[in-house]
Length: 217
Image 1 (cartoon, rainbow, N blue to C red):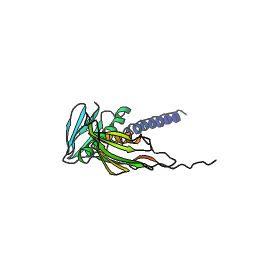
Image 2: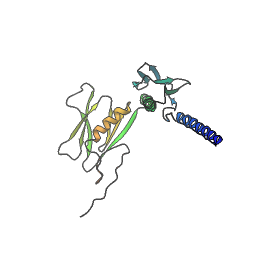
Image 3: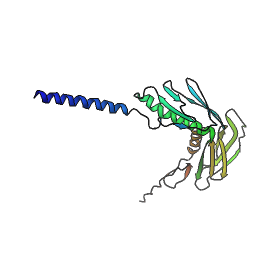
Image 4: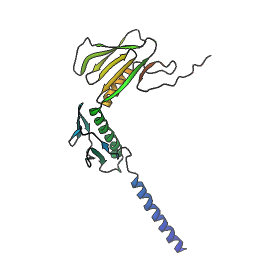
């Protein structure tokens, strides 16, 4: 009886040790652990609170938390890590910071672009000069859109956004900052979000809407 209790205690102790070891191995970020490959045209300047990324299209900055570690181990390869991966905040910021740095590199080398489609009878857009002129933060141009209202919709264009209207129902947006590009596209979309009955509205990128069947009485 005593021998059985000793064996059971030994098995229980071994099981607890292996469980804690497996739990410690789970502290990893599948996104953050991936190395960032960047072209030779990109240069970096790091401060305690930010990482400056400079490329052919300009310069941008990525904020850094105090616990973030950057290592340039190999040529044209950047590794991102954290001080204590067992803390939830550090793990969440690990992958986010890696993604922001990668987006900054892409933005400073290639830039980002997304199309906006106007779907609806009479929907159309045109690029024109803003009567208010070029103000602080604005390019001096605006979008004039007809979206089914009794009045036209005017959207001023920021200076960091490049807008082209190759067709009356197609708008092409481009920018070096992915977040600012998405915010401006959402600003246009909010005037006529896609509706699920006739499929009309402002569609961004590859956005699709599932058409609902109209119930007949």
